[in-house]
Image 1 (cartoon, each protein chain N blue to C red):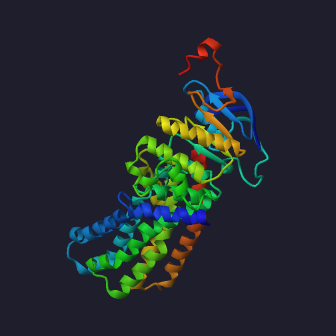
Image 2 (cartoon, chains in turn purple, blue):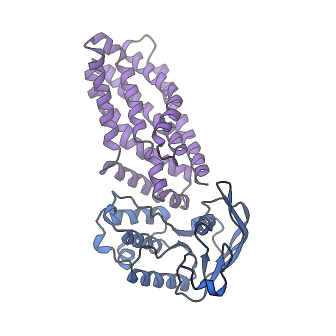
Image 3 (tube, rainbow over the protein chains, first blue to last red):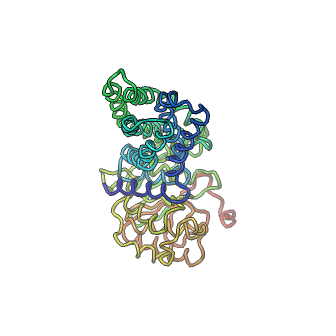
Length: 222
Length: 210
């Protein structure tokens, strides 16, 4: 357990220090989402209708932003070699790195979403529902992204490949995340139906992501 | 504890790097791995810890912990030092001590042993190549593991640090550890046994080995 706690503490420390990716993700999210009202124009009804979709798309891109360095940095400086020589199973190490990544890039998005909601003419219940869908859905984005980050670990410019690999896999999360948020804003579907499917997608990715990523890492290290 | 390799072969990128390498190294013994550049010295060390697939042959450890792989009982001092530039010297060492397990609770001692205790709070980004190497060596001292695999261990080290590394290696061997070292230079720790990954040079040529 101390080994896994050590990974969590180290990754979070690196993320919040100079050159870490923690603030970049949330700033990117704020900038992208804030640009939309300028592009679409001051049509309040339209903004309200597309608001959840915009926020979800921005969250998706923001959570991919720092992901390509997640394993690549450890690979380049030799940390990954030593991690493979530790007693902790690689699957758990990968999962803990995913948790650290979500705490430093996913969670800030959830906190920042209501601020951006104001730009998009969302009222209080809609903002709460949207934040809730992001809270339930962003872990799935991180843990699906782990797989892409592991596959792209040895590539110099892995970021682009990562986006191409990961974005299609996140389509179900996007669909049900936006559907749940829209259901809370305008109906007529009850909020619970898409939201439970979103939670199920997250739970599945929490299980599948670490195993797939660890298998990819082992393959890449050969 | 005895590490035995029989007829090891390595294939990387579709190329045969070496074949038919056999050696046996027991507690308190040091084995020097020799060969020209590209002969596969680093690949052999990485193969021992399980980071490179064994294409052919067998690798066995007698007298170790049967629950653990060889890699989990070994330290690998490679070309990369695995330190994060934004973390301080102490934080870097503390992470590896906790992650690798069984680390010393007090890190001042290993840091002092390599002469880095005055720099403990400095971010690792500001360390020189030699100081980074010293920090890697502090990792070997902070976490006790019986097998040391050293890849060009004296690279970037000054004379004093080379002296103290030799002293650490002697203490490790005296404590029942075993060492595999890939190096071109001499090892001042008799008796050293050697394994050559390519043709061993004739006695005349051996003196010219850089």
